[in-house]
Amino acid sequence: MKVIDSCVFVSAFCKTDPNHENGKKILEEIIDGKIEAVIPTIAMPEVCGVIRRITGSVEMTNEVKKELEDLINSGLLKVEELTKRRMKEASEIAIRLGVKGADAIFISLARELNAELVTFDNEIKKKIKS
Image (cartoon, rainbow, N blue to C red; front, side):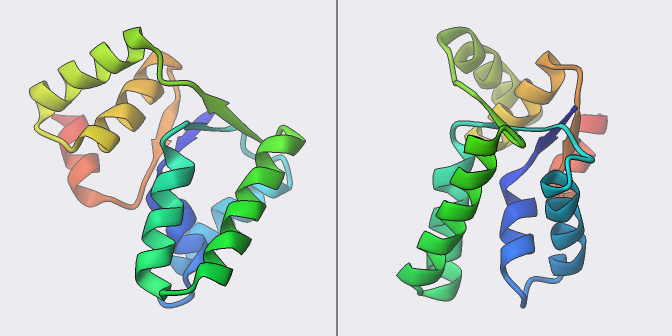
């Protein structure tokens, strides 16, 4: 099982992103069922917000949203709710590691599920190792 950071989806859908090929490969592995992928509920709005800001295109953002919804509805991409317990744990991680709130949610979920956090964010990678 792998928790997939929002930046991976952004990279997969944005051809100009420096991690586009890596993101596309991970997305293809999810689609092919090679990765048991999980995201927190915050992921879809986060991805949509970034795609809209980067591209300026409502149409493209809606296409990305539909692709994510299709993955979720097919069961290839699992979604975990942000419960009160998870909120508290993510808050503790944000305080302890000094990461953004959304990043803390991804880190916390990966730890809870004993799963790898797949991210291209080097700051997160450094902080979770410390």
